[in-house]
Image (cartoon, rainbow, N blue to C red):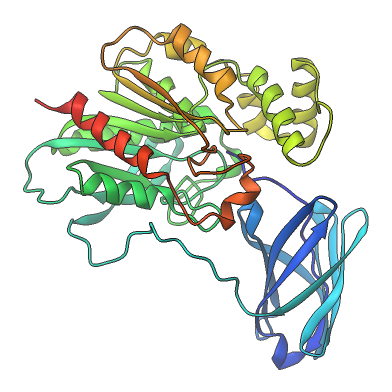
Length: 409
């Protein structure tokens, strides 16, 4: 799931020098949307960054045009955004501009949030930071290998976790949630090892994320699978992929290099057709009363014009059908009723029609859940930050139970 690019980017503000230091929080009301914005100001280094919590955007760097004892002006040129404001009665008051102006006021402080499912130490299992290499691309991937509770070098199943679209760290951190951290903890407590890693060019991993396509990310995942097999510590090696990571699971699964697959909202058909549904569903969730696009051709043109780049050019041309048809290993394919990104009305029939028969295969759609497998009444990802749940408990249970059922000996 590529991070949503929205109207935010530049912040001009006016403030007393020492009082501007630190985080400032505010609400940007833009039409039907209300976005929680956090501005980070460092007077010593003269740097400013921006978080937009409902969009999963963290530490967006801003170009500082002016920062004095009582004022600041900052911009994000690529998004044609600017903000200007002034410190008045302890608040930073100003105007946010992107095509039109919106009042945007800040008060000091961070935004409080609660993540009750996030694992906390001490942990009853062992973790190890490891590296593996995609030699062809000269990329080193860095991640965390988590062994299950009671692991004594006895062989157990292991899953390689592959993130969705967009540059993400090994925890697949989005909207202040860490779903892969939670999954690694849950699996370790249920006898399953896991390896999660930072995407190339992200956090500790090397390489350039922006230059890569889904095919390149699949080669990174292949290197992870080869690394896990080289350790000779594990009974079976599978992939758990979310969204684009689920597509990558089918790409590698079609080659017979996996023992099992867990696809979390992974697309299973033509991407351009799926994107017709996605754009229209997301548009309606944001208040549109008619379809945003009518045809596949219109969708392709819109995405290539608005997003561009190597990744989109490759992604929009993908058809997962032949990969799904050639995947013979056991597959757990999970979907969510309120998923606006990989809608089950499109994806489930593609899975049912093309996945080869296997007594271990399970296709399941959860009522009331979103693309991130949270209980979410509309499925809109802009609600994800405000939802305390990281992953619905029924999903966690089904994943561990299924993996253990297909890997037991």
